[in-house]
Image 1: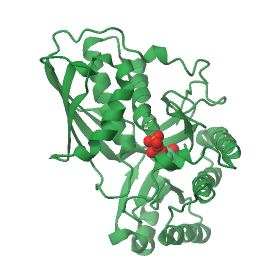
Image 2: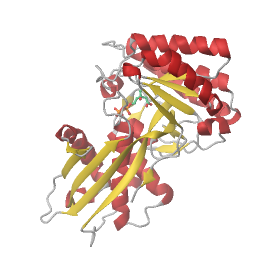
Image 3: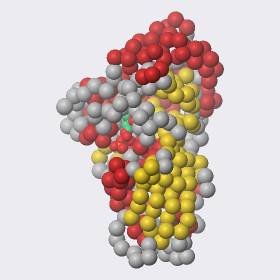
Length: 367
Ligand code: DP6
């Protein structure tokens, strides 16, 4: 655990001169991630109340191109347009503006440029899959790449940490979308490199079974959630079970250390499913209370449990802040689980839809 977790000074940009950098473009592809130990509850400035760990995904990602042009007459405003999948998207403006203003102290050159942000996701727009992790991390990576043009020393670990630090300020879970296959975000006494400020690659030994773990995302309800994650996090303030929940999450992460090393899938399943249900337990017991699972979420969970009992499979589930179910299983079970999904679970998905994914290695610079 970093002893100086609040040392944000290290991320302040030096007084940089964008110099001759007049215009250009930068593109990144950044993945989504699925938390095994969940982040739910935060404090200002977007710091987690407990440590979390996630699998970085491979197929679900956002591609973002940042086009930048030096302003003719510099002012102190953020000037940008957002183009989502080829069309202007003014709805995205307020969230991105808030993000850019928030990161201005760390990238003071932002107001010297005007930007066009072209972005798109590999997963269907209305799939109910949160795009904030992949979207915010892709944008953060483009912006840190721009900074690197004036400060070539910003490379390697410093570059990735700064990208994760900035992505976090856009969306907490985005801090875990820079690298892979397992990323920890949040200071944890058992993980020495961990920090509240940014995500770090899980630093200890990982059994090979987890390097190619499968994640099939069952799209149970593709509609807009009735309660956003941001509101849900807020309801952890004053939640009667909050303290116990934060301790539980940190304990689960500690318990996962030997599991990651030894590949004990029974223990993995127990911890991961407990995390998913605890997350939703917090929603069921907050004030006001709410339910994001749908009847088909529960149907799927029941069937996963029966399948495991009948076949000895290591298939398990986890949930995000929504009704969709992530099915996690070793690559060796790809065919049997694939058949089970097709024949028994697809019927509980909206229009029979699901997305096949697996652990990935992190973001990719596209030029
Ligand atoms: C349930 O990162 O979407 O997916 O920081 O407000 O943008 P903000 O929230 P967000 O919360 C994600 C919550 C979660 C669990 C997790 O990914 O750890």
